[in-house]
Amino acid sequence: MNEMKVGIIGAGLAGMTAGSYLALHGHNVTIYEQYHMIGGVAGLAEQDGYKWEIGPLLLGGFGPRETGTIVLTELGLQDQMEFILEDRGLEFPDFKLWKPKEFQGRYWRREKLKELFPEESEGIDAYYEFYTGMIDLINMNRDLELKKGLGKQFFKLRMGLKFSKYKKFVDWNAAQLLDLFFKDEKIKALFTGILADFVTKPIEFPALGIPQINIESAFDKRILTEALGMLGEPTFHYIRGGAFKIIQEMEKLILNNGGKIKTETKAERILIEKGVAKGVQLSDGSIENMDVILSSGSIPDIFNDVIGRENIPESLKEQIDGLRYMESCFFVHLGINFNPLQSQPNQLCYYYETYDIEESIERCRRGIYHKGKDGFLIYIPSIHSPSMAPEGKYAVTIYTICPDRLKEGTWEEMKDHYADLLIKEAEKKIPGLYEGIETRVVMTPADFRKRINTKRHSFGGLAPIMGQVGPSHKTPIQNLWYIGAYSESGGGISGTMWGTRTAVKQILKEI
Image (cartoon, rainbow, N blue to C red; front, side):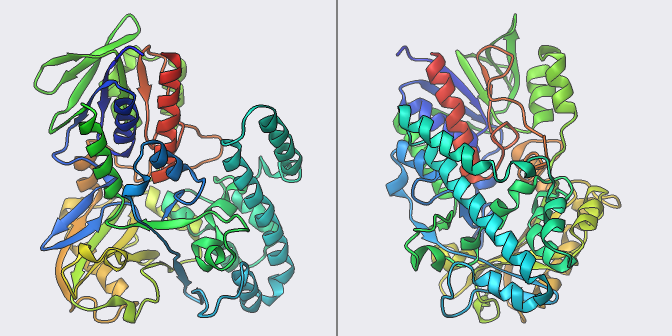
């Protein structure tokens, strides 16, 4: 294969994954990163001997035969990582769902919900029958990647027959599905609460996605360890040292294979001649010619500014102009001097303080920040990675969704005030939290906009709204490809890696 000169815009997870594959295949790779650090939202924040993950928490997709594992194995990086199987808890104002001390089987949550909502018992059983069938399909779809030839065709036929039972739900939204099973708004909120993270209303989210955002093994890892994984539940892991460990290992791979990573180097413009991408113009005015260019980044910034709207067809303009994005996030990273697990039973817990998920999302879209009153998440990364805090101390992250722009005031003006309010809400769950603080780092949408060079920050890219798909990896411009959380692959750590792998495989095939 002839060596290509490849330019990649962005040294986040998508850019580093693409660079790793292409450098490993012998191509001349240069990655341009406008920030002074690589990693994007897969990076780390550091201060006073503490480290915090900027974005990732408990990661899906890194178990046997899962997408993230396949990517790392193909790149020869799987053995460089230490994955820690874990789970999380959640609380609502009227009930808590922490795993029991003694393992009670795959469906302990089903039985617990019957205790909490006895009048919903019939619907709970019906939902879990639906859940089991959908998980079987998720696993079959995952295993389809490993099938070949005639065996693959028979496997697709089996999948089609199984899916026929659920085909009627394809055009349903999540609210319709949960109305079918339940009457109580509280139990409906249990299954739609995570949609607040996506800033997507239940009436907008696909019904068939509900099982995928409510995986039972996410709330009890013993489902996999006790049952030996025979039931096929997807897995959830931490990475020792945080997800930035993936970035670090990819960096070594790229550099060891002759690639270059240029930080504080902004690609201002992709140079296009007669519908063909020819190179990039950098912020210092210099031009670097390329055979192939891959770009990550937000859709408006890349397509309107870096590519230029004049270079894209009307159909693509209409598509990108009609897209809806997630909102941003507000992080308060703390270094504290006592063990928070004295109060919180797990290193990760979601605390929901409202049952009205739809109204909470609507307020966020209108620029109104809930100040922690609608809920928050508390994550303690130094439990799985002790090196992220000085000995005897703990790194803690409190996280909420929030508007990218506030209706009143700016994030620069309000960040410390809102941080204080959020810590006080979290202190209701972990008493003594405020007094135990030794250092803190506050990250607002304004900080993220600067870090990833965007006019509007969307934490996770496009909102997972029914019928909405990001731009294709292969753009209408020859030799130009689009990757990352805003593209057709969608977001998430393993999802971004897998989508980038798909794009690179297409590139290599076309060569």
